[in-house]
Length: 265
Ligand code: HEM
Image 1 (cartoon, protein in one colour):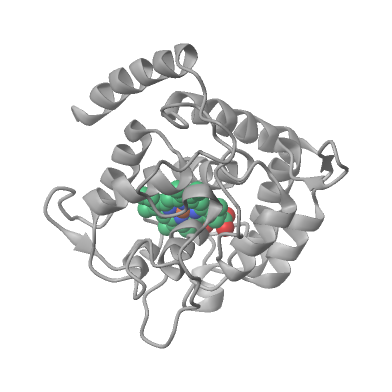
Image 2 (cartoon, helix red, strand yellow):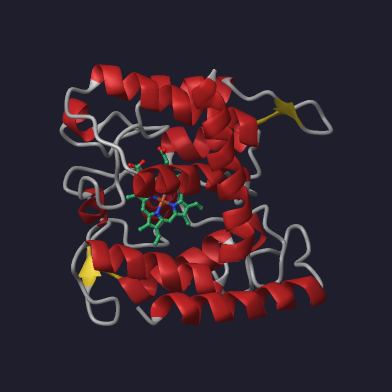
């Protein structure tokens, strides 16, 4: 696959760019002309009957604010790339790579095809058992809505504090909760499956809570429960070219290593 060396080479250049260029200013992470400038997000409207949603709180929130189509349908992979970049300040390399993975999971063309959000819940595609915020597909039949007891427990597990004493999720908290969910899902779900690939995906999704959302429990409550971007919210990533694959993978790898430690206990 030519994609991997291409994305890596591009990502290395973006990392160098991030190291030498000034960071974006707080309050100005979203660039002019895009939804969310100055923390003013388009109106939040909860989904209604017939709208398509998935197990990804970040993508559902984008549809709930009308950044992605409100009905969650007929989204092109190219459109997804551009919009996640501007909304969450992931790097262009990351935003090119993840929709490619999504398209390939769904056996669709990144360049020509579109999808509905619910398509992303193809079980054991990107969606997997033992999520932090959702019941397993087998236990829920439709994994999409957040399982509030899981979200509450995740947020209550936060042991970090910011300078004002507000709770923050830490890498260790997330690793611990990933292992807890896996152990519980193994007991509760007779059809439980896992794989190294899905464990890495689980750690990747969880690492967005620490990076893009800065682990801030107050913000995560809105994002994980109502799938809403709080008024005034912006990505915690200030780097000029956004959160690169390489920088993100460092966090994912520490979260993954943390789960190894938890398993031994
Ligand atoms: C191309 C873009 C994306 C695709 C295709 C995608 C897809 C998914 C899918 C299928 C899941 C369900 C995984 C599971 O079973 O737990 C998921 C979960 C999640 N995603 Fe996304 N996602 C994308 C972008 C993002 C972005 C940009 C963020 C953060 C800003 C994000 C944050 C999350 C979080 C926090 C979860 C919940 C994990 C859990 O419950 O364990 N995703 N995503």
